Length: 523
Image (cartoon, rainbow, N blue to C red; front, side, top):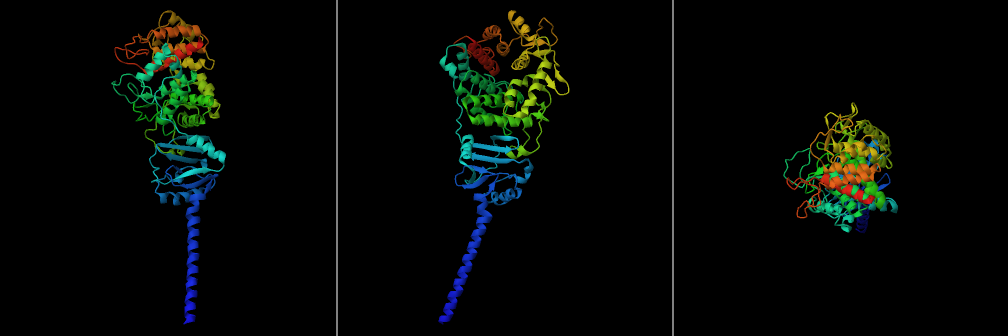
């Protein structure tokens, strides 16, 4: 009996040992097959780690080990129930690394590839993690610090505020204009309405009411930098981040007054202006976040607003395209047409951009050449350009805003049309500059419109300052101020609008604000 009992104990011990070994084997299997990929898998010197807080979801595309990426895809994401677009849909030979951070209302992704680093908001709703998620830990304290600096810095909700210079000088004309813009032509987040009125017929490709334009934001960024107003600059940058930037890293050209329903297309002139101002602001106030945002926009411009990297397109339309980051690696082509307004080309800003993105350097001189070729030789500039036709002017009437923007952008890099200054001086001496002129006019100007625009006078003032004629800039501003509303009882007091019709446009008022500031700085 004792022998049998001992044999039973031996059998029990053997079974226990076998069970323990099986347990260890299962544990090892669990660890190496499942937990290790979760906790310690390294791809491109990046470690995936489990995070209890619902902070971020990260997927990395391996540059060298495609099978490892597929393993992560098959084991990791089905378990936590995350919808994920298959890594096989990406072109792995392009060496992308895609990382997406999701926290609170913020979704930011960084994409790193052969063409540099950039980030953009993610509009996809496919990253719901049910309270569990992943976060990224890059090796090295310096890299972690960089990551925190880029992505986890708090971005304040933009709010309306008066420009700093206006707060110091509230009673001058510039200050009264800025107060009107902030008080009556802006929403609570600092977006500027296109028009004071909000009852004009809606058109999909126009802005007539309380739509907020990327154009207005870009003009305010310029004004903030020209007047060294960090608070105003920061407000407008935050507005770009929160409301304008689209899924392809390019700003929407307009949003609704409640900052919703962004248009699913862009405007090249405003995209370039905003990116250039972000680069200037990043350098002036040493904020790398703005530099990376500029890089994101520049990546979008280059990919989607240039045909074959040479010919500009005036916009990019993403209305029929996917709104998730995988689209970034798919062969989406520019779709904005081939006829570009000459005024959209800004060689001075392109030259600035080329200092941080060398792909833009070959685009600077061609942009200037187009402006030079568009010069009609009678003070006016042709309005449109296509690769096949070059600069052209189909309509008999040349819009002066378009012409002056082309002249100004040329003057900013040293091209001064021989006839433009004398034409403008002659018209100022005659007491007016009309909104349009005949394209075939000779030495004597031939008006093609019977009305005038404050924006034209503001652009003329900027042009004269650019060519070092400050006395003529002051004359242009004097004419501009004739259209200012001087009645202190009017809601338009200090602004440029029509109290009878109620129309009052952001473009007139923001360009006037710029001109008043620039002329003031000359005194």
